[in-house]
Structures are given as structure tokens and as C-alpha cells.
Length: 260
Image 1 (spheres, rainbow, N blue to C red):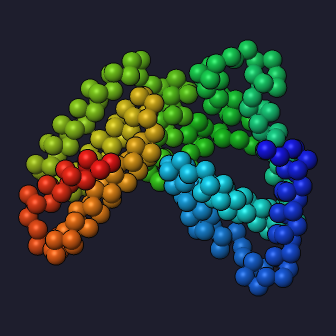
Image 2: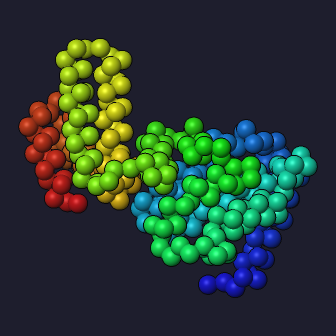
């Protein structure tokens, strides 16, 4: 691993390259915060995919891509005279020190659970910070991640089940309410009840220390693997899926499960 001096030198090299690109590359020179935004989202998702696959080589590459965007935004801010990368780092350091009194102050919290209990209260005291606990949840977050974040913040404020086992009663309640609405065929009510059921399942996942987004993505990847297997086996038999019976596809599905 590199020394701190080598790390600082490497980061300085990245800043120098960004300075050059903004002057000499037509594409980089014309970029704005707005034009980069969607690409940034894509890069973050690519990093998340590499993390799910536990591929260190890909994680390193994708961290670099995300870091490039961070440096890019800081450079744009510098050109506007609003802030530069030093301002970004200084503000982050100040925030980290303020939010960790158990490390940099005299707070007595020793465990991760104790730290989490005071986290939201600390953030509410922050100058220029959130005025309400849920204000810090980005409106643009994907719905599953947003629900998980909302529930986690509410938990840190003390709004949570006394026993995690109690959540299953709520899940069952929401499932039954959905079944009742499905029979009525009111699209708006059905959608609302699906939302309530999803929200309660995400809550259950949180209580059992499962990230619901990761869990769903694992199932997505599992389904893709199995479905691709069915498609490939069908081609070997000179068939296409739409001409196969469900029984035939189910048989291949069971074989695919055994290859995992």
C-alpha cells in the first residue's frame, strides 16, 4: 500500500490532469453540472454493481470513475468562484469532526448502536443542516433505497418496533388489505396497497439486518442466470421460448438452479 505522501501526490496528479482537460479537451471543456449529472448516477450504479459482485479490480476502476466526477464538479465550482476541492474537503472534515464527538470530543458512546442513537440529533444541531429528521433523505433516491433510508432515520429518532418479530403482523395486515382491494379492481387503491406492502417488507428487511436493495438485486441476478440458461438450452434443442410449454421451461429452470 502507498504512504500518505504518495496518496497526496497521486491525488494532486489527478487535479493537474483535470486542469489540463478543462482547457485542452473540447468535450471536457463544455461540461456543466447539469450535463454530468446523469453520467454521475450511472457511474455510481456501476460502482454498486462491482461491489455486489465483490470484484476488487472493478471496484477500484469504478471508484476512479466516481472520483473523476467529484473532481470535475469541484473544478466547475472553482471556475465559477463558488468553491474548489479544498473547500469541499475542509467542509467534509468539519462535518465529520462535528458528527463524531465520540472520536474527536468527549461523548462517551462506545458501540455502533450508541453512536446511531445520537446520529440524527447531532445532524439536527448542525449549522445549515437538516431542519427535520427526514429532510436529509434525497427525493431523487430510488424508491426502495428511499424507503429503507426513511425507516432507518425514523429508527434513529426512536420510532421503531419494540421487537422485530412484531413487524410480521404488519406485513400480514398489509398483504390482507392488498388482497381485499384486488377483488375490488380499483387501480388506485391496489397501487396504494402494493406500496404499503412493499414498505412493510422493506421495514422487515431492515429489522433483520438485510439491505432490501441488495436482496432484490441478488434475486434479479439469480433470475437472469436461470432464464438465460433456459434460453440457451432451448436454442440447443432448436426451439424458441415462446414455442415451449411451461412444463418444459420449468424443467430447465430446475436444472439451472442446480448449476448455481
